[in-house]
Length: 63
Image 1 (cartoon, rainbow, N blue to C red):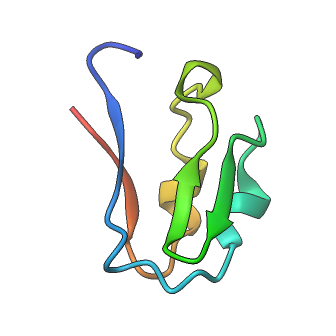
Image 2 (image 1 turned 90 degrees about the vertical axis):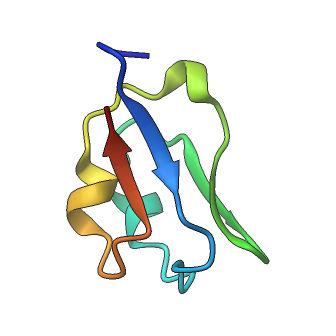
Image 3 (image 1 turned 90 degrees about the horizontal axis):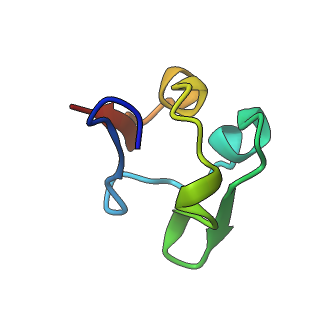
């Protein structure tokens, strides 16, 4: 975790488009039948690219 930040996923908002998965530079996001999920929280660098690209605001960084 970087400076108290956390990656938050609102599964009910996720439309499973996969855009966040494609833009993740560490390849730690994936999709299942419920939507996007983090494969490895330890490897996430909390860069925010997934948040910037999500058209549904379903994934974001929170302090």
